[in-house]
Length: 292
Image 1 (cartoon, helix red, strand yellow):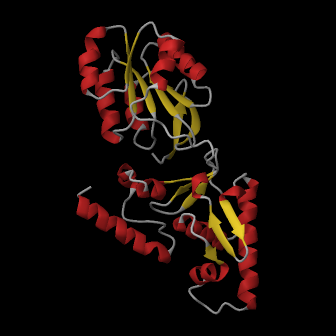
Image 2 (tube, one colour):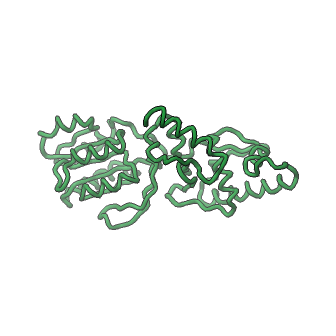
């Protein structure tokens, strides 16, 4: 999921920024506070590098998944207001590849849990060993994105974020447009002349424009350097490219075959930039032809 939203964590009162794609994101859910605390602590012990969101009310998760994505969801089956099975159906409807792991003290739910293509089934009392075993045998393996330095949102208006989920600000609008075009090219090398033609609509590439391009590039690199993301840009003689492996991007996910990200496409792609209009047309035709 490519998601960027203000969400809740822990006691459901602390506001934090959730940013998908930079590591494993795990949900824990149980309407019993002590059981939830124990489950969450065990998950954090087994996966200390993961971002863990705990919820005591299943309805809160239904709201959360509208703008966020979980790689794994540990769900107690018996909860007030909504069962874990019902909650799993809601999560799967939003993202079929979320790994659902049911947690319960009742083995009678094993068959309906399996019918939902759950990743696992943990019997209470929960232990570190049981949690580790389930996380080591996920139905849908979670990609390691620990080398990601920048996240790009291309559907709608283009924006880029650092590893903490903060919006990266550029002193020059053309610097932001430059990184947008490089991300669109997905690692293909672009000459400075080509980039100038995109940014200035094929106006004459004279010495004045060359000097201005250098200022734009310098400003772009400064903005990226300030957030530790400068390594996403590969600079060589008279050309630039991005290291696509260091970028988490909704468009890249689509190109890799993750059609689920198109749920976030509402007819616009890098909407600020006219040179990106052809991609919007391509995505619209793809959706129409596949009845997505």
